[in-house]
Length: 492
Image (cartoon, rainbow, N blue to C red; front, side, top):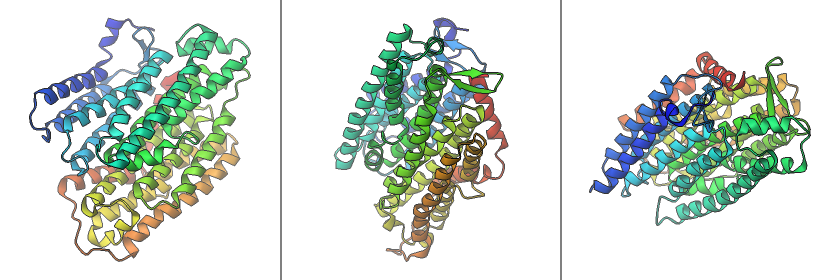
């Protein structure tokens, strides 16, 4: 059911809340004199918190489209809106503690951050390729500005430049692929494109379109070979933005990747309870190989990294490879595994980056050597980081283990054994470089003897991230149920 523009406004309240907050921040920036005030951060927290509450109150039902079919209001979109809003709230807390951002305009920073959030809301719900492209650009352009926000710092400027060049290239290739699809089908609505393609044998331009669109989505999730921007951008950007890029836009990228490919190049089969490929377009093998290569490249290159932010960047690439395993299976269980993994990844990855911020504040460095003896200098930070790193590895009883169990189990159940073997070997490799940081923290003598105390506020935030990382490894059923229902409302 397509709702008109005015009727859609009452169901568009989360996006309107974020938009209103951005406008208020602009007024604060124009009228305010104190550029270092905490007011922009608090206003941003209030706006994103209100948007998250409105998302939770939204009615989810399959088949409801807003603004004449431009965006969808279903459980799948609601799940990703809640996930990205939660990630943004955590990143705002991280930004308030980051010394990198001290002395810089706070209002502009939060305007860009919330603009990315608005783009992610729209991207997760886009059902028209025009809206999809506009949403993707709304995510990308403020991200470029945030990556280079440390003006005067060479690595930040380099990060922004590389991000812009790679992003513009990927965007141009993707929209060229969209033009092929529009030329072949005469429509920009994804469901209509899918119905036209399902009716006959796919001509060559459809294959070209699929590959070109993959370039754009692959860039957004940092999948190999579209990952080249990621390490330099992650290292040069402010650490809160690095954490944000590793979770928020990546989650939105997976949301639009699933919605696009499962709508345009596949069809739901309610009888079989899974999706079936359109004639002559078997993209699952391509993404299966992409998954294996992505996780392997990410893990193998991470071994030699000395900078923790850069190491976590390659780790993020590897985790994108793990999540792609669920994408190629064409089953609701596979998609449920991706959604569940994104939830646990949010807590464990943001938690790791939060500790990186605190250590950088105290030591002035981000190299692994700066973590020497951290177990003595700051036991709370060291233990917390160890918890997050072991969760990222996938060791029980942490939440990352359950996330990988869901992915591995469905891959094995569908008979894709070669991919499961590669993923298992990569998990072993990842243990080496994660454990190396733990070894430095607890088994090496500190370079300095001064303590690195963790204040009450960051201690509370880290605890709020560590508790789900532990709890979801023991009791995960409610989150798994929400993920399953979100996928069910996507098509079945």
